[in-house]
Amino acid sequence: MHDINFIHDHEVKEHDFLGCCKDCQASLNIIKPHFMSFAKRIKKYTQKMLAALEPDDLYRLYQLLDDLAHMNTGIHLSGLILNEPDIRRELPAICSYYSAFFSIHEEHLAKELLKSETPWETLNSFPLYPRYDALVRSQVEAVHTNPGSILAFIGCGSVPMSLILMNRLYGTRSIGLDSSVSALLTPSWQARLIMRY
Image (tube, rainbow, N blue to C red):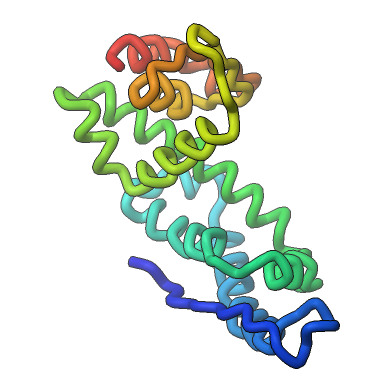
């Protein structure tokens, strides 16, 4: 399912004083076509077309962006990628797609969880569950809370995964806030999801 198999060794040698390794420009040249191809592909979809996709098709479309976003590139190469003029020009479309994807994904996820007799098994089977799990674990490492603390998550979305997992994995109580109309239109989903977990 993954479209990119990329390894970048940030091997600093003769370019020590340039702040770059010998492979950064070559790596950028390898990575750039993937970004540009992804941007071209997603521009063919309207929000309505994305929402109409079956979840597997939506995840397949997202997978390339996920692969690109989670490459182990190092700070310098990441900067080269984000500042490359053609890629930089496409970033607003990519960010817009990313936001739309998560909004649609959370709606699919909420519906599946509410239908499920075994919601944790259903949640664990979702393609992005490992990302949510890793995010929550990194949040716990970054935020040192006192016992009995209540955390507030601003922008929790239709399915407040951080809240659900913080409670499930660490027993941390949380409150979710979201200004999104689509998130606010689904309070019964949130209430039922939180109560089930």
